[in-house]
Length: 134
Image 1 (cartoon, rainbow, N blue to C red):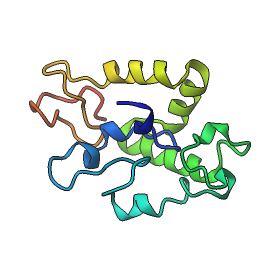
Image 2: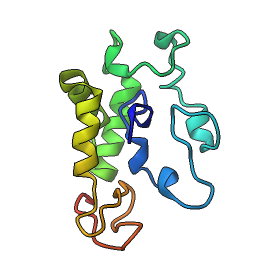
Image 3: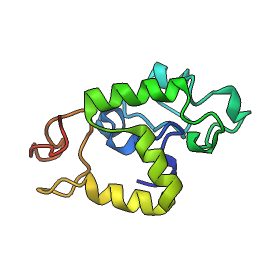
């Protein structure tokens, strides 16, 4: 996990199934290369407010949280128990480096130390139960 692991919307790419899978691995929101179509055409990343700087985090915008971010947040809370808006607020409050350190520990599998996946109920490395899966 590093600064590039945090999408502008507050999603943590490292805990995504696409990023963790072995075959056809996603490179993450902030990197060039293989990613799902919906990520390449993301309306949040290409928002007009960013004016060509897609790597700005959305909390830096005067319209934060906008309708798009609120919709994404609602979906993530319901499906995965994770809030991109809360992630962005934490980053704003404590800084991205501290946020990443905390999240690395938070998402570490208690059994094997591998990062858990927000989309799966078990660790992709050792099949231990994911403590965060709703």
